[in-house]
Image (cartoon, rainbow, N blue to C red):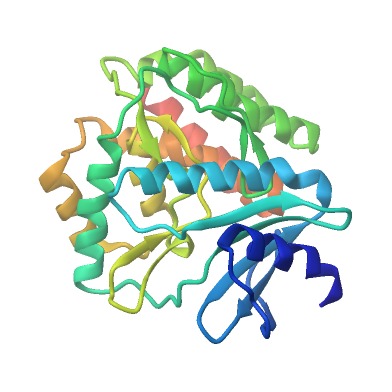
Length: 293
């Protein structure tokens, strides 16, 4: 495709290799970006493209992948290059043939995630803002988890919901929840762990050796339980995963309540991204949390 010629040239200049001749195949499955596989006789690359104005989204994704890779804990796709031209912003990664994560792969992922979560910073947040799906995710650094979660996670999603016309009980009960977060997080003082940030079953798989691979991150430093909570939101990880994680880095008491609080963020995000079908679930989760206060 001629419109991707400059991206091909960028890969060649970065790798110092000619890609000629190559095949370019469209890859389906994503709802935010267009994706392609570029294949040569020796190598294959995965290319994401979107409009030029979204270049910071790809810059943040590249930085997140590189930061997770630097922990040497879980395999992530290697970043080849990232940039913008007149027609596209783009991100080029190594192409990893993926298959379902099964059996011992779930155990390994639990162990590896526990080790990644042991990578700390003295602050909650990150070096730049990024996105959760296509929703802006604010990562201003904060030394207090409660304040960070109230302002930049739940509070921000409720603001987006109001802007999208979701008002009424969602907002009134949501504000009450925000006012009482200190009661739900009482005596819980997490250290800022490196998080994948969007760890559902669709963002984890296995390579051709059966080893875990995680991708499409929304990285920041936060309570590690937020990653764990999301693995439970849509299923797909299993008991062996949790047992392996807890054997290395046990969760604190009270997690059963906090996971609802943390998953509310993602349900509100789904409400804002995909519509009112998530309203009832969001309201139910808020009411459940208020009942715990």
